[in-house]
Amino acid sequence: MASSTVAPRAFIQQQNLVEQVADYLTQAIISQHFLPGERLSEVQLSRDLGVSRAPVREAARLLESRGLLISKPRRGFFVRALNAVELEDVFDLRLCLERHAIHRLVERYTPEAKRVLAQQVEVLCEAAESNDGTRRIEEDLQFHRLMLHYGGNERLLRAFDDLTHELRLCITLITKTHEAPDTIATSHFKLLEALDSGSPDACREAIDYHIGVARKFVVKGVGETGDGSDEDSADEDVLPR
Image 1: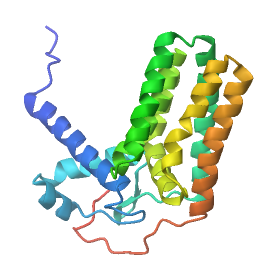
Image 2: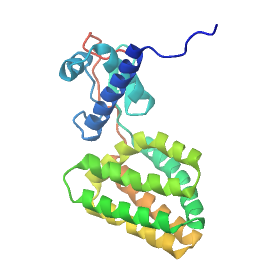
Image 3: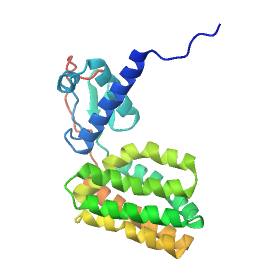
């Protein structure tokens, strides 16, 4: 008789706990409660969150796979500090994905897609007026995710979802270096105008400009950076790899 494939309840609960801790750490990193290069303390985090050290450690490994943390042998986990080269790579990949997506979208731009995207820009503009930086980032990403969704290629969308973890760090840097953060929201109207035109060339020009401006502000504002940490201690307070 085949063995049961039903996962133990304790395992499911543990996995949910790891995701909850990962969500908390993600929000803390995006809001810059933890700064680039900062070392994470397993002891302090487990105490603050009221959980054991195991889910904290697993959550850190998960965020390492998502590009938000880096690990150093015998030193633990640190908040990732993107340098100019890494930022260029992220935006280069983003441009490849979204350039193809908007080309597909303009060919199948339905009334529903137009309505939903226009509504999302309004939501993004509303979020831009608030003091909630995390919400602004999420609504920005949601607009672009919808654009890929209506482009009709779910694998392309999954690739974008994988990239969004690093994009959250990048958009955080945009809001820090952009001279007028509210224009980040209103700039999406130009993408809608390009889609309304029905011209693939206009769409490509619009997305190149949209992502190019973001890349310029981030790379110019950040420049080349190190990992932000020079500590060599390896005590029990450090998240082990």
